[in-house]
Length: 338
Image 1: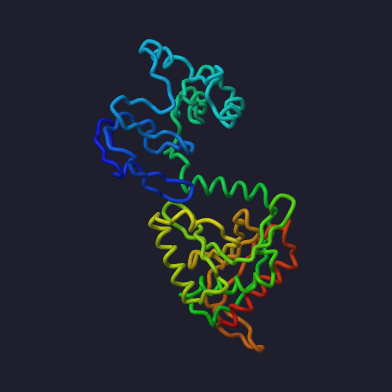
Image 2: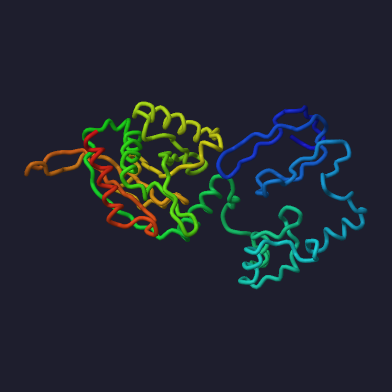
């Protein structure tokens, strides 16, 4: 789509990649595209005007444009807000202070003339080009960065690990079997199916478990509902459906919200075990390491068994170590009896 193009009402106008998924926005009216205000790939706040449709090209809520002379002067001066201050986020201001860059001397390249991190770093390097290829952090990858940083900052994590015998499990049904085992065990250990809310702990009475799915755009965690009451076959079908939608980028927002606990398994890429990061605001996450044939001792004899490691990371503010271990063993008992 370009300025000057004619569009019809409800015609797909722009594709937006949100924190969780990609959505297509239809045109609210028919007419000519007068202005495109945000270029492709830019990160902007919710509510930002993206496109103006109409002959006059006026942006809703803005005054008429200034005379060309004034606009030219404004282009030559450092970008400023309504109070005369340079437009820059607190993060960019702090970076400029650390690098000794005077924001007043810069011309911003961001939306509405805002000074960006790249502007500051470029000035600090005396205009020398940055080394390597630079891509903006946005969409799912931006969410992952923010989410993991918050979890690392706020949650005091502890990881418990134990070996499990997976000989009786059809590995094609490994994830749904683990979901079922976790849901049943969570009923016995409600503090792991909870969340910390201010100065209180909220114990949840539903068992909607997130499943980590790797996609080309990053890790997403769709939610499998009612894992306690669904059969393993039903859980398998739902996991498959959600995984396909995740990789296609077609998950609905509600399919990514409201999990009470999370399970992750990377299959052959999993390694022996992991120390997963708690999916805030949940208080625990369980991961399955690579399941493979290994020597095991049974009834005093060494045999070949199909084993793997179960790792449980938990928020130590809510869950005590002994209770976390008991929960992990309860899950393993169910897996070995499957």
